[in-house]
Length: 287
Image 1 (cartoon, rainbow, N blue to C red):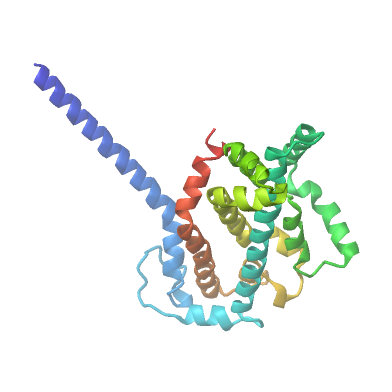
Image 2: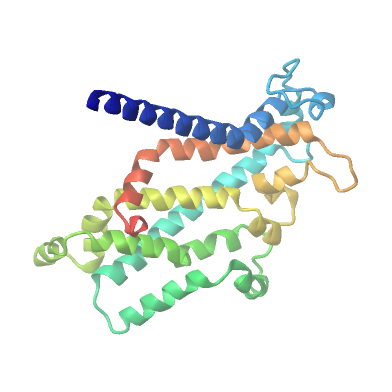
């Protein structure tokens, strides 16, 4: 009897596992289907894009990629270059400035540290749109509108409180005895930051780099506000030019360039996936 009950329990467990896996697979297919359809549509002729929901095109064609890359007054390669330049500068600026601010909040003692840290955390509750108009007025007075400066310079001023908090949580987990030993050897706070803290903080720095790159690469509102000349467009703004409000749109080129625009994000994520997981697991995001 006990053996029969055990067998029934095992069978129920297996059935429950199969049902769970079936549901997860179905949900995954439903979520990835639009992406697969876009990939399939990028290889179809223009007149067949919206005539079928099948993932298998009747005929493969690279016309959409050729027209999408060279069909605009400015090559789409220029948009890619602009996006890479902005994203890399933002990554460097965020990692450097936010790590400095986090080092000060977590390892240095100064008057008003707790108040400043609380005020910094309060900025997380401010929507981007609240500061949008004052920032635009400031950058216009500085003559930075229609340049990359409004998109890059703030990243060097530690404006992303999320990454500061992330790094503070990580730095607090490092033994302070390392700082004391380094200071006994004659290291200044700057050398402690550069020689001790930074080499031990690769996971959280990689996490900040990945999120910064993805968010900057996918940003549409910022470039839309500050960039007006087509040669300065980013890849996201370049995709918008394929859709014309008058009804004349190149959907083949749009889907083809959308596929290419996803490649840097996938590549950057896959390249640093291990460090991303390690960084999240060892910071306050797990609490």
